[in-house]
Image (cartoon, rainbow over all chains, first blue to last red; front, side, top):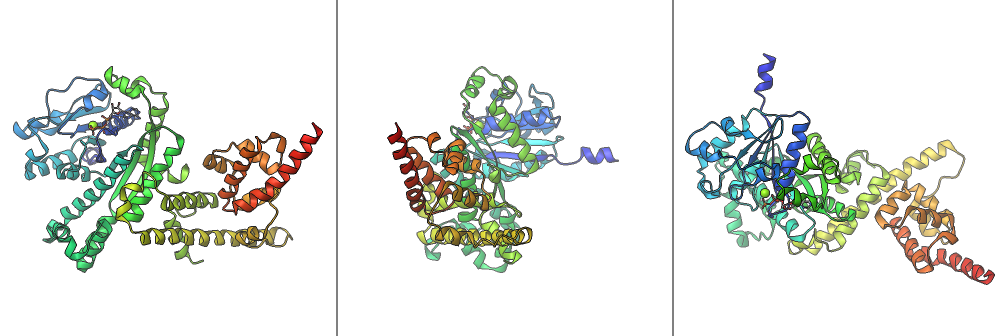
Length: 311
Length: 186
Ligand SMILES: Nc1ncnc2c1ncn2[C@@H]1O[C@H](COP(=O)(O)OP(=O)(O)OP(=O)(O)O)[C@@H](O)[C@H]1O
Ligand SMILES: [Mg+2]
C-alpha cells in the first residue's frame, strides 16, 4: 500500500523562463537536472522550447527521434516518449520543432499534455521554455511548483524579466477568473485603461481589486501564491551578486510580486566550449566554481532558501 | 515597539524575523541606494513609477530602519545596565551627532555598538580589512598615501552613516600632524 502511494505521488515540477533569449535557461536547467539526478532523484527534463529545442546539446547527446509530436499526432503515451539522457536517473523528452509552433497547439491538447506531465513517474520534472512571453509559454511556466527565472546583469534581460513576470501574473489571474465567469475582466480593463486612468501594472492591480470583493479576494490569493525563483547568471564581478537582491526588491515594492533569490552563476568561457564539444559541463568540470554555484542553487531551490541576507 | 511594527519594519527591509543588526544595516544601505540612484535594475521601469512613489518607498525604508535601530538600542542598553555600572550610552544617532573628535578608537566603538564587522565594511566599500584595522588603530605608517587614506576614512564613515565630512576632517588632522612630524624626522 505504502509503495503504491509513493509511486503515485505527483512529481515536483520546475519550469524555467525569463523572457530574454540566451540568458542561459537551457544550460542552467540541464545542469540542475544533473545535480538532482546525481543525488539519486528521478528526473525528467522536458524541452518545451517549441521553436528551438536544444536541451540535448547541453547533455552531449544526439537529438532524440521521438518527440511530443508523437503524443499529439500518434497518441503515444507520454512516458513512452521519454528517452535516455545519457545520465543515470534522468530522462529527456523533447518538443518538436515544426509541428508545434506555439499557436499550433489547441487548448484541449495543451490541457491534456499538462495533465499527463503532472502524472509522469519521476521525483522532479524540469521544463525548459523558450524566450518570449507567448501565452502558451506562460501557461507552461505557470504549471510549475517552482517557477524559475534566469537573468543576466544586463538592462534588457532585467527589463524583459519585469515584462515576463507581469504577464505571467496576469495569465495566472486570468486562468482562474474563467471559473468565475470573469475571464475578460483583465483584458477589458487594460483595453480601456485610459478611461480608467490606469498607467501601469500596480494601478491595474488596484483597479481590479476595486471592482468587487470577489475580485479583490481573487487577486490577493493569486498574489500570495505567486512566487518566482530568481537565478542570476553570467556575473563578472562579485558586486553584481547584489543585482539579484535588487531585482527581488523591485518586484515586491513596485509590482507586489513575491520572489526568492536562490543563487548566481559566474561567467565561465568553458561553458560554451563544452557545448561545442558536446560535453556536459557539470560532468566535465564538476569541481569548477560554476558547478559548485549550480549545486548550491539547486540545493536552495530544493529547500526554498533565499540567499539575499547571506551575501 | 509593537510586534506588528517590528514585523512590518522587517518586511519593508525585506528581512526575515529575527534578523541581526548587521543584516538590518546591510539591507537598509542596499535598499536606500537602490531607490535613490539609477541602475540597470531601476532604469527599465523609470517611467512606470512616479517620483512620489519612490520618495514614499524611501521614507518607509528610513522609518523601518530607524524603528528597528531604536529597538536594538533599547535591548542593548538594558543589557549593559544590568551587566555593568557604566552609564547607559545615549541613543547612538544622538551620540554620534554630539561627537566632534573621531579618533580611530571612537570609530571602533561606534562600529561595535552597531554590531558591524570590519568584513562587512570591507565587502561593501572594497577597502581591505587590514586598512580598516589600521584606521581604527591610527596606525598611520601602515596606511596608504594621504589621498587614499582620506577616501578610505570617508567610505568607512559613510558605512556607519556618520557625517563623513566631519569625521574625515577630524581624522585627517591627526594624520597630517603625524605626517609633518614624520617628515621633519626624515
Ligand atoms: N555562466 C555562463 N558563463 C558563460 N557562458 C554561459 C553561461 N551560461 C550560459 N552561457 C552560454 O550562453 C549561451 C546561451 O545559453 P542557453 O542556450 O542556455 O540560453 P537560453 O536562455 O536557453 O537561450 P534561448 O532563450 O535561446 O533558449 C550558451 O552558448 C551558453 O554557453
Ligand atoms: Mg534555451
